[in-house]
Length: 363
Image 1 (cartoon, rainbow, N blue to C red):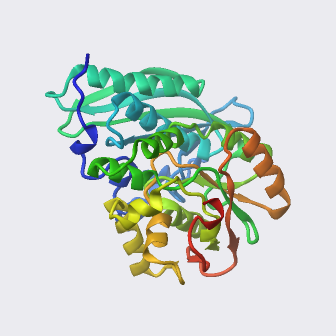
Image 2 (image 1 turned 120 degrees about the horizontal axis):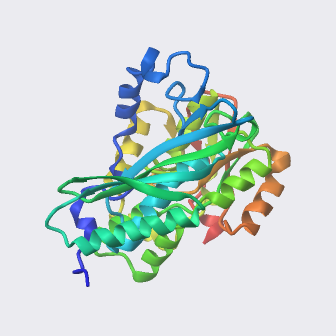
Image 3 (image 1 turned 90 degrees about the vertical axis):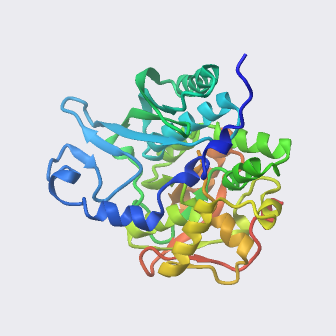
């Protein structure tokens, strides 16, 4: 039997909270958005780095209106249980295919592991990942591993999508409502796990959210004919909404009272359990001026920036399709799905919070 090890103690930032700061990544990618670095003018690259999206989309001859969707993602432990961490990391990596409106086909493991940790632990990580891939209806076909002082795990994933069903970050329009399919708060709970402050019920709720595939939500978005969407991961709701509004040359308004939260997270934030990555995202947004918090207090602001691991989809839906979309999402099991804001004409990339306490309607 594997020796119990608190895996979250091996990483300063658990899960997607370990991502590079958003502005730093934007600056680095900005230097690459020319010529061969982005695929140049090759028409087969339907989605690449310019503009960047959740995954690359590549056309193949003879696919009759369908394309490959290619992505990779890996992260440090967000929970201590190795099996559950494997499931979470794999579900998180698969999510980028779903965020493009696609279906996963094939996955490869990406693994970094310390030599002095029990090998049975890594076997559990890989078992959890394999089960998530199988649940997605995809095949796991090998991978690559390295020795690393901090455990890291994820997947490279190949999927496919129809040309007329691809979701883009910049696909929304003025007046579209913003539908979030999962509650926020897993970053807060992951930090609480590291600090020994998370209740068992809170951890269970976070794990259930992080291991839920975005497959049904993606199918619902495609069935309703949506064109705009992304998934919420390490840059929180405001960070990924900033990416959507920047790509679409629009502004967004968030209605904090409508934002669903996992139970207990407001209390945990008040007790200091916010990931460093969330604090970096929030401070960067405030410094750059694209996030306007209005009357939102510090707890609300941190929750809007909470670094999600395997978070839900954020979908831009025309008002006439919102009812159908929510009904389809709820039937498919995404029972927390709700409207949390809207896209409007205004300053491209700006995100404004309306007055009111966060999560009020879902308490």
